[in-house]
Image (cartoon, rainbow, N blue to C red; front, side, top):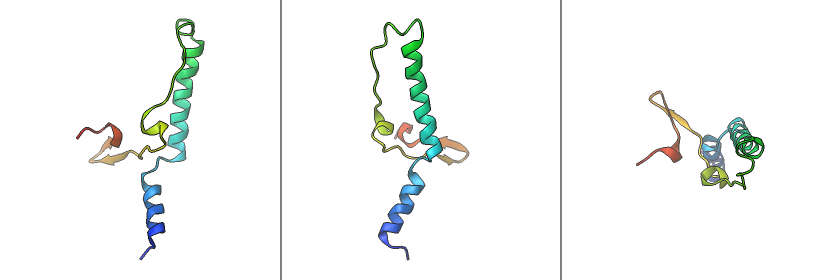
Length: 78
């Protein structure tokens, strides 16, 4: 039987987004910010931005596929 620390580590590996997912998320918001800073019709209006939600708090949970449908836990309504 695994020790509690090993079980916790296994749980984290199962629910945390992969490094690839983290990199894509980072690339996405950085590209949007860069577009707003440099695009002719937005650059004079763009003041700043901030991240919010689980991504910003580093508490994001890995999406899973359930019955062939990609489920994103923080977007699922109860």
